[in-house]
Image (tube, rainbow, N blue to C red; front, side, top):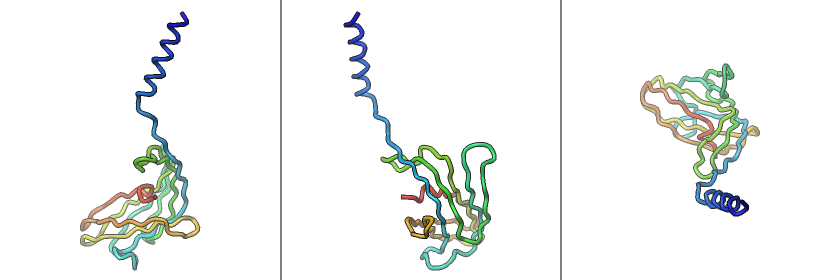
Length: 141
């Protein structure tokens, strides 16, 4: 009886060693602003309209802000995988939906924290009269 239990426990422990380990995720809760500029990050982007949507999973839990003005607040509360940097769980996210009303262009996005310190920037190319969605959590380090 005791030998059987020891064998079962030993087998389970060996299986636990052979199976893939759980990945670790870190929580990011950030409040700040995102500014949309031209490709050289020197002036506001032109020919752009859109909305910033702060949303969370569930029914009717969203806030929308029209763009322009081309600086919008954001709130992000997500868990990111430490190894890949991808979002594995989202409690609150901000998504930009931008439409280009002119020819093809490249825009620059600058992400700042609540006190105004810049901690991220990215460039996005939009086709003429094209629309793009951008999750702010993808721009965060």
